[in-house]
Image (cartoon, rainbow, N blue to C red; front, side):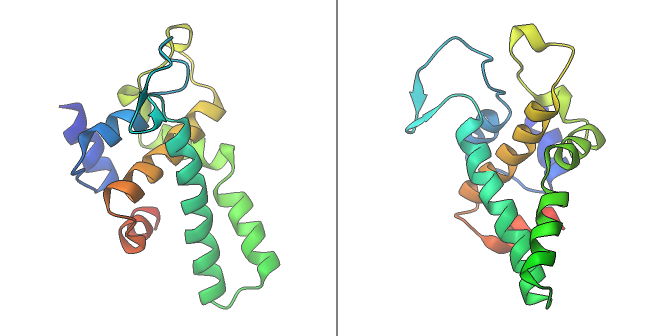
Length: 140
């Protein structure tokens, strides 16, 4: 089952499977503009949250670890860039779980891959009741 496989990769079990489904729904994969829980059905909103959470994790690790603000910024840019996140997308073979727009069924852009990883982080953040340790463990 898809949910079991992706949860195994993430090492996180979702209490709300709808969040996982939303995270895996790449932008423009439907013509519907309907909303669920105040968010569109695609993963863009979760990706925004995930982007912010990733930044928090990286900067918190750096500052607590004694790094300078400049060093933290450089690490954040390197580790959360679209190329870095799309590498994770490929390594984890996330493509097999993502609901893509019809015009993108064989090719996933670097932006879509990175946004999907960010959306997964955002989904875990919300589903875990914003538990920093849970999200941090998944980003280690």
